[in-house]
Length: 178
Image (cartoon, rainbow, N blue to C red):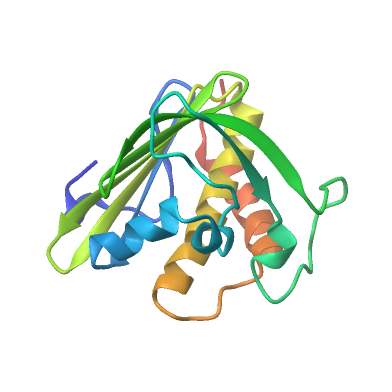
């Protein structure tokens, strides 16, 4: 997964009920790390919440996906304006690795690696409950990372919900049936 020549656009099933997705980002690594660790910067592409720099500490993430781009057009019915999740830090190794729990039993890891003038971000979401959620999670991480790429490149992000809906259909085709 760390070979820059094998970087692909979509997430891949990296182990049973786990998805891994990679992105090349403009450095320096400390800047990219700040978009993972700092609540105000992370809110611009994923979710707000102060993540403690100590393993074992609890924290809360709050998503407001309608605010991630200039349009909330295309928002699927049944999705709230705000979603909150309780989590716990598993690893906090600035500026290279952040891992936290994803209830009820999942785990998400972010790994940053210098790759020439760019930073390779690897996101792995493990212990996803089933294929349906793998499709939703794959589309979600992909759409959120598209916004992160836009923010780090100082570009206007695409509509989160329109991107997510399109990606959900694509991940439904890409993720093998159980």
